[in-house]
Image 1: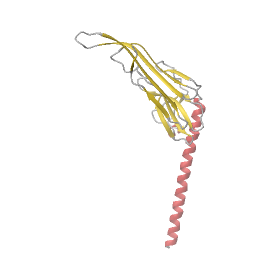
Image 2: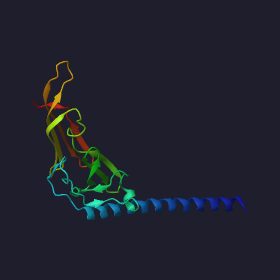
Image 3: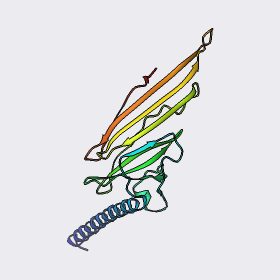
Image 4: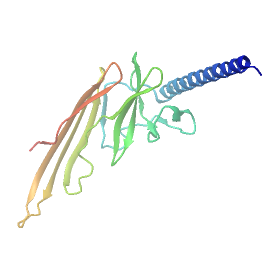
Amino acid sequence: MTVKLIYNLLISYFIVSCNSSIQNETSTKNLKLDQIRYVINKSEFIELPLKVGTNMENSLKINYNTDFKGNDSLIFDKDIYNIIGTLPDTSNYYAFLFPSIGDKLFPTIITFDKLGNKIDRQIICVSCCSGQASIDVISCYDSVIVTEDLRITSKCKLVGTVETEDSIPMTLNICNERRLNGNLTKQGKIILSDSELIDCN
């Protein structure tokens, strides 16, 4: 076998391998986009403005259950079990609303570009209602609003009492509040600004 023949065989092998790799990559992108469109169709578009009381049971209606035995594994992280819905279509990205699971369900947005690549993922609510073992809670609410222009507002307010551990125990009134403001950019980034705990007494 001549050197020239070996050289030609190697070049042919690399061309075939390269073409196969490009075809596989294109096929995966098409599968991702097809699956994104499928989930949009099944979960439906969310009507804005969206107002959610996040500490109320059933306030986040689930419209799609993810299936990681199928093509959902191409687009969603393994901890995304359900999709609430799709935010209205934009020219640059797709955005899904889903509940992140913790002490309660936290509304979360994940965005993808038009090629199916993940852009961003963030919880869009503040919380002061969960993990308050030392406070005797009188009332507490968390809320999230997403407006038509994709601005995000979240507010949490907790009212309760706490017993001090001083030599002479006292009951103190507690009123804590937190706020979050933000928006989705035209590029699909989620920009949020979270406040410190505010004493609302």
